[in-house]
Each structure stands twice: as C-alpha cells, then as structure tokens.
Length: 464
Image (cartoon, rainbow, N blue to C red):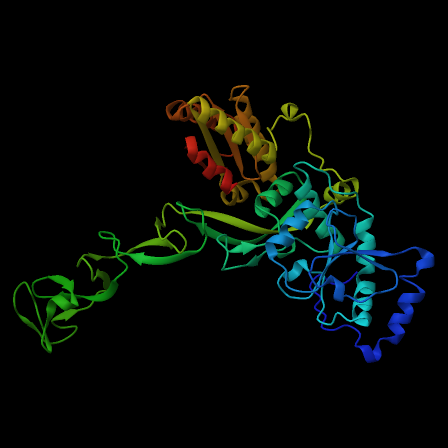
C-alpha cells in the first residue's frame, strides 16, 4: 500500500518504461486473469488518455469503479459531490494536481501510457483492500463509515491541520468533501469507535462561530485598542502619584499637585510601576481587557465570554475496524433503552425536529449543557476514575428528567433538550439536577451550566 501523502512526478519515464509495461501486460493487468481495473475519469480530456492493457475507463459516476483519475484541474465542489454520491467506501484517487492535498493517494504529472500504467500498478494493493469492504449504505451511517474506511485502508490516523483560510481554522485533509467532519468524528469517539489525541484549542466568535479571531487588548471604558503603556511617577514629598506625562514640564518633572520640581530619582521621586493609557478617551487602567475581533463578521467577543472548541487527532479502535468490515456502525437501534441517553447523532436529529415543531406551533423549547471540569476531576480521582464518575453524573441527570426530555452524553458533558419548557422552567429543572448531583456524586464536581432557548439551540448543536 502506498503512503497517503506520496507525491509522484512523472512515474516511469518513457525511456525506462518497457520493463514496467511488460510486467503490467503479463501480470497485474492481464486479460486472462480478468483483473481489469475500472477507472472513473473526471475530466474533459478523457479521450487523450492512453489505451492501457487491463484498464477500462468509465465516464458515468453511477457506474462501479475501482479508482478515480483526475488528469487535469477539476472544480473541487464537483469532486466533493462525486465523493458524496459514491457507494465506494474509500475511493482511490490519482490526481494531476496538488489541489486535493492528502486526499489524493497519488499525484501524477506525466500521464503517458508507461507512467499511468506504473501509477495504477502502484495503487493496486490499495484498490484491492478497498474492494474487500462492503459498499456504503444510504442513511446517517454513511459518512462515519467512509471516514473509518479511509483511515483503515490508508493505515493512518484522522489527523487535523491548521487552515487559516477556513472559518474553523482546522480541517481534516483526508476527509475532503465531508461537511461537519469534527461533529461526525466526535460522535464516533463518544461511541467508542475512535481514540482522541489532543491537537489544539481554538476560541470561537460568539456571533458567527468562526475561529478566525484577532486577540487584542482594549480600553475598559471605550473598548478602543489605541493603548500605550506609561510609567507612574511618585513624588515623595507630597505623596502624589500619576502617569509620567502629567509630571513632564519641558526637560524636567514638576509635581502637578504641589508644583515643586523633581530633581533626583530616588531622592525626590521614584517610578513604582506602569499603567495603560487609552489614547482615544484618556482613561487609565492597571490592566486592559482582552477581547477577540472576528475577522469574518467583524464583531468583538469579550475574552471572559469567548467560548472555545477543542480539536483532536483520532485513531481507530478495534470496534471501528469491525464496523468498517461489517458495513454498519454499532449504534443501538433501541436508544430508548440506553440508560445514559441517546447518541449525539440521535440527539441532534431529535432536537432539530423539536425545533421545527416549536417554531411552527409557537411552543417553548429549551436546552442545557452541563460541562464537567475534567482537569479538576483528574486531580481528585485520577484519570481512570473520571469515566466512572461521569457515568454516574449522566445517570443522575437522566433520572431527574421527564420521559419526553431528550438526553445525550459526551465524554465531558451532558446535553438536555426540554420540549414544552420555557427559560424559567428550564432553570428550575437544571437547579433540581444540580441539587441531585451534589447529593449523589462524589467527589464534588465543578460543573458549568449553559441554558439555550429558541433559535439559540442551534448554537449548541454547532458547538458539540
């Protein structure tokens, strides 16, 4: 199997291609062995591709094929649509450009017969491995199975990279064409299919959910970032203290209070520290406030109120390999019998349905997120004890809600959706849950509580 990031420029030049081509005709692509490779060609240049023994070119994306050939630049959106429709769980791609990044299994600059023959031969083991997997099903399991199949067949983790040109700032290159890749991977990790490895924590704009934020210090009074640091001057004789500019009188210092000249540092005065001065409104402060300016919506978010999102690299676990080979994710169909609530996928689907019902009927709807400070919990019970404490927490939440409330458990939080519940009733319900947690769960937990109502519930769904 080739390396996922392998970059090949003109495999097997024509002057050296005879042994490779002979090998192709005699073994891997021999018609007598009926191992023809079906290649879907996504290009207007398909007629220019060479005839190769044992290779069939397909033009219909609905046909069965073994790999995808992209000899020239194609709209990325078109490739995304193609990958979203295929039944192949992890199509092999040979591309003529770098545009697909790691999603291209091989990048080829020379598309002559010898070079293309050698390229197809080199990916043949990967094609075989993919062909052994079941076809992708329709329905909500499709993207999850495809992501797991890509990691399994390429023998790699699902690794993120920094992408400053994207609103989220982080992307998963191998999952090109996937929408909401992080949400899907988090759901698989919560279901025990993937192991998380921390990658980065990014703050998010409270207005548009972008992570393209500019951190800056601002004036606590007028919110301007036009700040300058000035030293303080302390006059010993009268005790007056202010910024240095208030004492400046030409080339000397004069106390604004008693009008005496300050001649000698350490005798007449000292400089005990400094303050920040706003050059817009003139206010002074010991510490400016930190806020984030969103580069997308241009609105500001206070540092004290900015949320954050953790990003992870994901490794396959044994259950995910079983799922890939079986063509089905092992989520329980009878979610009502799950004592710790529904999967994140089911929770999202049900809450979105509840939102549409609430909007059409005008009935109230609230949701809440109870987040455990796992860092603090680890110091109290150790890493191994965290999961059992969090399981108990989830059970307590479920036991203190109504039958028609919707609950989902994450690795460090519990999500609750309460139909027919307004803000006031939701606060009462959450307070009751908190009292039950205090009475039942040991050690004492640091839990952050957020309540969402109406259209703001979509904000919760985007961040989990």
